[in-house]
Length: 274
Image (cartoon, rainbow, N blue to C red; front, top):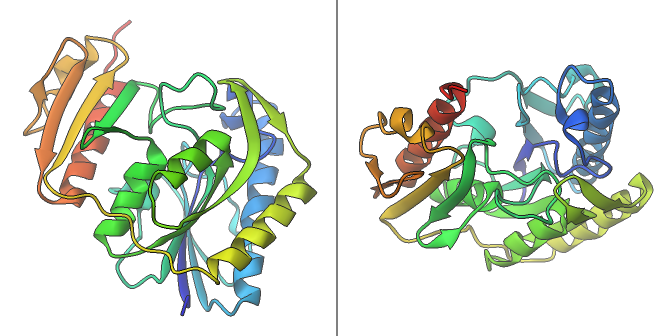
């Protein structure tokens, strides 16, 4: 019974969004993208409430994490807003949720044909987890799995849908656009996206979806955009240099490994000297 649902809501995978000008808080085009983000979230939460879901917790997971306005959302929603969250895009997820949903997700860093592709930060060129190339979808799905929470649905471009398929958990996808390049995509009208959400939510309630789990130890190899970023990132305990731009670390507890990954990307992003 899906009585309590957690939603992580990003922006780059929202239908219509394709440019840095859409996703950056101070840009002229940002407010339009924010409204589309709100529309998709309200579509999903409305469908869940009609299905009898009792509680929905939404984590604003994009950039400064101030994109969603509580007065524009359903009164049934509890909104986690603001940055500096220990678990970032997964802040607030606990084992007592019946399922998780990711909205506005995007392709993994390094893909040339996924709209606004990246993995947590542009400082990360590529992330490998237990020998598989991963993006935010897989990293955050594994966080859900560590809490024994099934990932029910992920929405984003066609490359996100491919990453969801690789989870092999029966998690459903909503394709909001098709990538041509990192800054170009084939868009569809928001009403068509609503129809896709309606079908996907129907499928979710008809399907046995399993939590996504990897076997420990959880081994990360993170390649940073610039070699000098590794110097400061190596301050994270347990990290080691693999090559000029790649560091590695591992742990038997996924949450610990995930937080180490977040620390690496934060240090690399904030300490790049031009």
